[in-house]
Amino acid sequence: HLARRFEFYACKHNPTPLTLGGYLKFGQNPCQQKSFKFLRFELAVRLANMLKEIEELPKDLMNTSSADLVHRWYEESFRELMEFENASSSDQSVLSEFSEALEKIRSRHSTVVETMAQGVMELANSSPDGVLEDATRKDIQYFLNRFYISRISIRMLINQHILLFGNQLNQERRYIGSIDPHCDVLEVVQGAYEDAKGLCDLHYCITPKLDIKCFNPYEQGEPIQMVYVPSHLHHIMFELFKNSMRATIETRSNVTDSDLLPHIEVKIFKGKEDITIKISDQGGGFSRDQLDLMFNYTYTTASKPSADHHTPFAGYGYGLPLSRLYAVYLNGNLDLAPVEGHGTDAYVYLKTLSQAASELLPVFNKTTAKYYNSPIPVADWSNPSHTTGLTTFLSRT
Ligand code: W6P
Image (cartoon, rainbow, N blue to C red; front, side):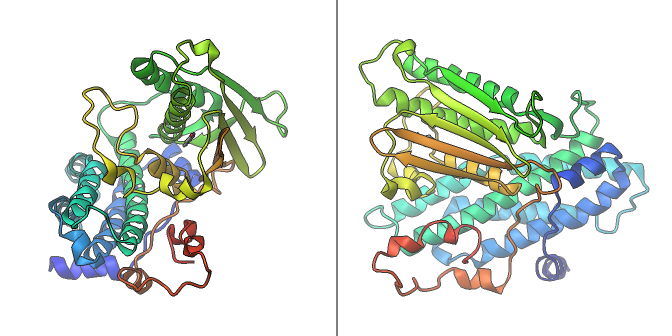
């Protein structure tokens, strides 16, 4: 029976992308019954689609105990959701049990990223020389991007439901669930800088200063506000600041005074379609050959799990790829533009209009299945690295 329901949700339905505007509209006039009915269907679709994709992974990728554990978490959560398939939405106790089930699912999956990172390391260590083949790295890159973006989307749905209808009266000011309809970009950026500075001072005893400027040409004199999830923007900016701070400091091992470090410059622009945040450091940059490695899950992870006893200043090296996924999830992006020998510009692009901020969700289908284990395509350029960039990001094209 469960297998038939799984086929139904995984094969007969694709995830339905919502927009931030849609989330907001619903949250401003919330109805718990409607949310319950939508979520028991949509969460089942998103979990089942991802389960299907996990099950299509090449065997060697799934053979680690960590990946297997995550697989079982997804199965368990899908099974728990199915308990509500025929429950009555007009029964208040059903609605309460549903919220409890969602909280349970959310905490079950809270360590997915660390656990999958462990799996990737297990995989690398199980190969003779501890080095993964190119085809395997490509599969991991493709899968983890899709998997983590799906996870972000599932947690967004769960968080909205719990924050809107949960019993903790967490009516955080003007927030609609986790969404701030008047998210002040400057305020979030400054908060992320202060948090990164706290860590940086702890590790290096110095921190580059911040210069920040806002440009709002279409709303002269107005602060830059947008509909957004402040925690996502904070996550992205915190990560970028840590990278810029580290580069600025580590390229100047003799400097012991923050005032003598070049400042990190941030410019925030609000256009009609895009909000752009540009973060510039003078941390020496890096070569263009290293650009893809910055977003590679198998690179930093495989190198060394730091034996540091403090909060690591740089974690697994998943910070940048995950930050890009947070931006991409709502139709934005994150780009790096290094100038080797000088510094790095990072660009964060977000959608100005909440109706344009629509979820980008992986869709599982036959093409996805074929992607894995497909032979490395015959080179159509003399330098094959030409084809390994973002072309394999969420789809093949
Ligand atoms: C660097 C490396 C990097 C990654 C991301 C953001 C900024 C920077 N600066 O040198």
